Length: 293
Image (cartoon, rainbow, N blue to C red; front, side):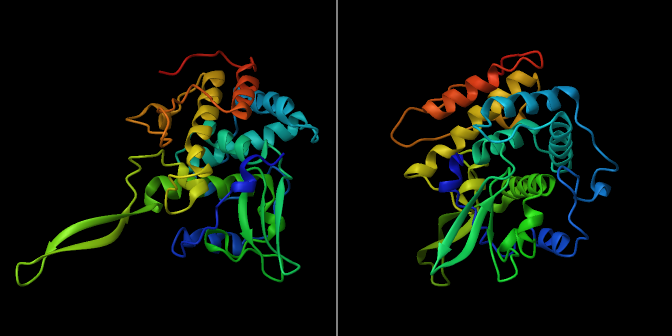
């Protein structure tokens, strides 16, 4: 089961977004082995290792939701946890948010992939733990925005995939999203004119991580509008089990809007799939549980 991959809209069309990311991976050396920290450790001043709580939580949740996919060995859980911890620190993100994205996009299946065919040719794939979109050239390299130049095989390496997802999240958090704003300007003759322009998204009607799925513009209609809430309830479940802060859920006013319905909360899953996923996460007893306010 590929979760929201069938609805994933990470086309990464913004040409200017994270130009350095494509360059970094396009000129990288040999692809690291599964679970290796592939990004430069210079960003964080040294190697980062996950704590036992993170490792044990990842292993326990993987076992509960792997849906007939191969289990992870303890060493695999440790390598995935190290990659999550390193990318979370490097980009000032909560490890629980990365895990929420991971569960939502792939059910923690590092081999998850969805293939898109046009005119008999594979032109795109969504894949890996973080559900990264790759538009392919004839040499099986990505050609789109943030992942331009990255070989598909390298993108599917778990640590690389986690790092790409974390950088994408940080980009949207730090101003990558846009919205249309109309202002009134006076011309030389004193006449008022309405001018429409694009400005950085203020996320007033949605949580900022919505853009990970929606792209530059938030989609407030149809199926995609549920995405912010789905990630929030998974994030909250992980934070509760791991007894760790999730600042994105508690700092300021968090809106997980769903037009036409009452406001959803970060601790109340509504859809059957997310009720089940949150219940499985909360059943894990690897760390002391607390309630987030």
